[in-house]
Image (cartoon, rainbow, N blue to C red; front, top):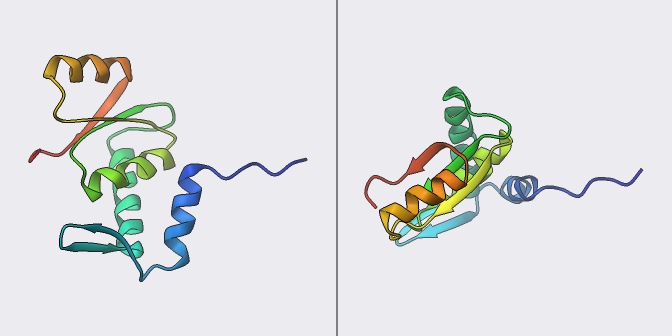
Length: 113
């Protein structure tokens, strides 16, 4: 029997686990290590699970280009959730339509924009 190909999430987590002390994400003057990213992924996954999300649920991310938004995808995928990412500059009516089309069970957003 052939071994299954690793998932996107498994590859991301394995890459972060390989060298936890290295810088994994830079954002402006700030930097997050791989360990900090892993901690954020698992913390976010626990929060999503505590909110009742699980396999097959849709998580929609509405945020600018921020590290926290990037880390929502692997966190949600750990739970088996689908993820849609929307651009915050789109017209409101379009965002509402896309979130509905994506089958959004939870909206993760950046309140600052």
